[in-house]
Length: 467
Image (cartoon, rainbow, N blue to C red; front, side):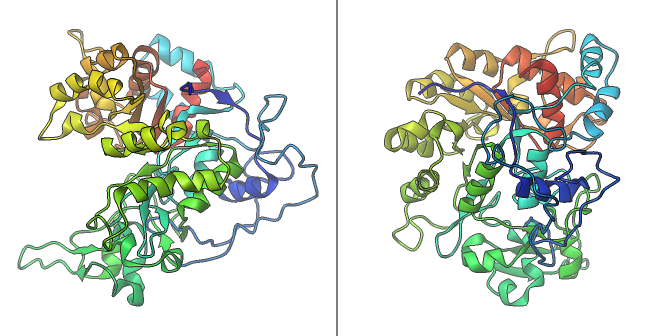
């Protein structure tokens, strides 16, 4: 099966989905105006099942307005290739970043794209949705990412006590991404209950609540919130109020949590691609003696087959090479686009040089796509310019395609960018430098796509460059 390069595409979102999207951005889904202000939609407090939500609310009960002919709105690509203006919007952030760039040819080129029409692109991957401002892995976060032109969305996959697959970044992150600790009957089921900080003893607040502690029905009763916890807290309320100061709780009222199957249905409705990541279990496997890692990996694939999703729309991911090899052997139509998330570049027992040396072996085993963090693909040359790294060059020489992570996850870049920019720190001193890095990743490294916590940033670049 051919590996599909990123494509720019038009998506006609069904009117109901458009209304839900517009409820987040104050536009009118039925009038096609897309101004975002004059005719605000009715808003409802919703079940935002995101990592840090609170009260559970209602459906996106957006009134669909006057009846429109929606024959082309069934998630199919439109024949004309034109995205309805009301359905995609990138907001102010991309141009804010461009204006923060140092004067350069790239800056001029990106500024010249400001008034171009916008289409979705597979180059722009919604990392857990749009978690810079929306609770991750929630319906609202995914809809926001699609609204910003992400052509592919990610559901990190783990399992509940009753072995149902759900979208969570980690099997045991409910204490920082949901309101579970504020629900006494469910907090009592957590692997480790909340323990307040003790300033006198110098101990931090702690808790650990896992998807495998509760059933799918109980999982669905939770609210998603922005990921974070305050380790100095002495109360549950204080512990849950740990959102980073460069993010926001503005959309963290009650995010709607999704099962993996529900994410498949939503992404299909939105007309985007799928990149599920099979998360490493944090319980002993085989779970309860008979649920094996292979059964877990197969269950993920089975849910796409059951939904009738074409394999070429799916990029299944794992940090475990054994999972990728399993898909190659047992589900080769999906395995052809399986992505090996390469953390060996920073693993203490392996390291960068060893990870580079392993790339030809990965290709020989049938792996087609690798995905290391951004910093592994770039370095600085003698003139302090960002250039492809040895890893990037070796991956290409081995015939491997590359995806990378994660843009817009570092907060303000004026202090060097932190972990994701660690090989280019000396060249990073302003927010606009995100586009300098992105340009090298796209044009010199040649990545297929980039995960972003705010997909508008990558969508803008992809549209400007024709990706």
